[in-house]
Image 1 (cartoon, each protein chain N blue to C red):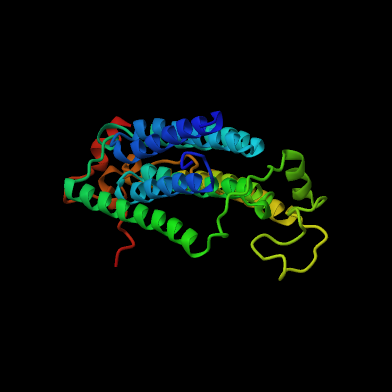
Image 2 (cartoon, chains in turn orange, purple):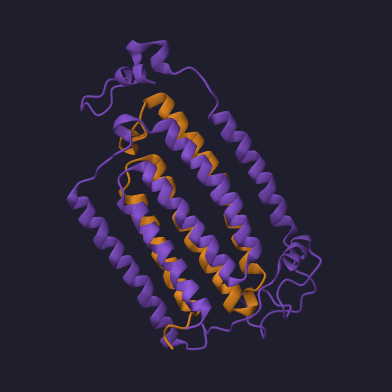
Length: 105
Length: 219
């Protein structure tokens, strides 16, 4: 009976993706690696939204609509983040985030 | 175990293992490849849940658009020493322990919240709204929630509502996307590098981690 898939299984998978994304953001030194961590976290949130849309009748439409908004905003965020990374690379010849220290007091 | 359960466990194993591989691998190009399989597995889960439109959007926008952007970013920036950026074993140990603690907290909160309030997260396998209902609710032509109440508010508290439309958020998101893309094109436009114009003025870093002039030759 515990193998029957329910809401909890999707929430646990979303939690796994969230933790992977958070650890990825914390450990990568490459700026694009950090961007990949952000994508993982956003996907975890999207899984939770769609799972709630399936298993809770109140969120039937809202879950899917917010998932769509998350996907579109993630595309915008990736575009602007990559523009910033390319600009940083043009000026510094590296994408190592440890060298971005000009604003350090 | 039904076919749905078997499919769920296959897709969940694919997604989880590939997400772990994104974190573990040190090569940024391989991380992009693992991220591709993770996003594909997530869209498969959406199809399994019955959210056809969200799954198709995930494939088109995320796998087809965002990941291509990321791969272009990798190709434009990753060369020589920047493909592999290693971190020390102590940092790995800290990251592993923090990740395990975080996952333990999340899983424990899920279990405890079910014990405290058994009716909260009950799995009612309702029907999934198809893309027609989604499009109508984005245009304000249909009732978004079935009973006419706002999501997250109990039916006894909320007032009656005729229509719930997401037309204004939809418009805001579309204008936001336009502004962001124009801004990104402005930020990332091609211009002359500082080191190419005046090589002497490129900052020399004492730790020898980067040297703008040496790398500028290889570009």
